[in-house]
Amino acid sequence: MDTHNATLLVVRAAHFAAQKHVDQRRKGESAEPYFNHVADVAAHLAEATGGGDAALIAAGYLHDTVEDQDVTPAELAAQFGHDVADLVAEVTDDKSLPKLERKRLQIEHAAHASLRAKMLKLADKCSNLNAILTSPPPDWPTQRRLAYFDWALAVVAGCRGVNPQLEARFDALYARRGELTAGG
Image 1 (cartoon, rainbow, N blue to C red):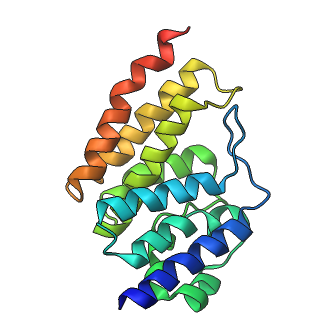
Image 2 (image 1 turned 30 degrees about the vertical axis):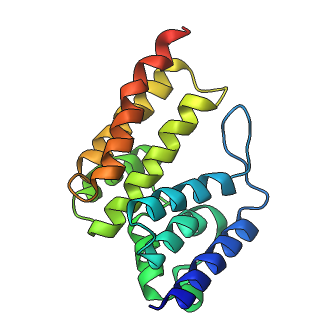
């Protein structure tokens, strides 16, 4: 893909994500726009690939649209191509399953995902850990925050070996886990 088409793909994905997530807020105490999360994930991926994988960066913007916004995989494929749609599909939970089962399956499936889907999963977990550290959901007690960190670690264990930069970022965030108990 040439630079012009790559730029268009990423910008179209960002715009689509902004429209789809316009009314969604993060769970954190600051209730920031959900788009900030997908933009953060895309930025992690852009940095980790040196901007060299436009489809992966676009998937970073779009990774929660099927799960959270009733967008279909076919709609993503039609607008952004099968490569992007397939990446999103690899990291999308089946919302018809109970939450604990979805979490268990994320751990199980991580090791079998494509290398690029593992990078996407790593970037997502980095963004989520940072959000819990900087603006935790007010209704999440310390134990739930700690449990999320530990579950994310189990998911990321299956994603190791794909990108040292993303792994180092995750490890640095996980190393701050103790801050979750510092106040209480």
